[in-house]
Image (cartoon, rainbow, N blue to C red; front, side):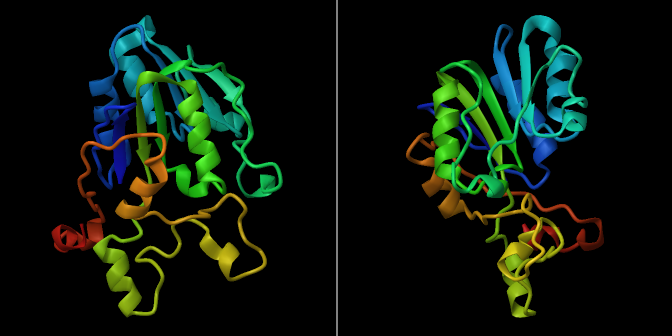
Length: 219
């Protein structure tokens, strides 16, 4: 599920195809002159889409712990290499991002929050660096999607058990950078609520080629 949130006046748009809908949400929210931060930019799809439409009329920034991830971003992107403080930083919590207060008009967080051990501290940090009238775009898997509910009937925790590394709950050799939290519609709203007001919330899409005839049901 993917959400577009306007700070103090928010709008949510959700979809299983979070990159495609994320691009649409960003392009809808962004205007020339905006400052944009993508936290965990992945393959750089969203920032490259923004650059293709707005060029140098917007300021792009990206944060990630991997240099090769940052290199996927447009060439004019300000690159900030840092660990966001996931499982390994449990004693210190979330590291403060090296940016001043109210630095960004749009903050993008797609498929990242489920990796954060201290999401409350993380969201508080996002609320510090976003402008009061800015947009926050966030996506995360929906643990309560019907596909996952059906998986429980067959003794599985998720319909896609290999997506994310939740093994830290059951085995010793866990991946410290896998999923450390699950979110549903209710829990995500509760998590974000102290910092962002939610105006609109809708369900997610579900795209699996082998299950294309069942997608309307699973969604």
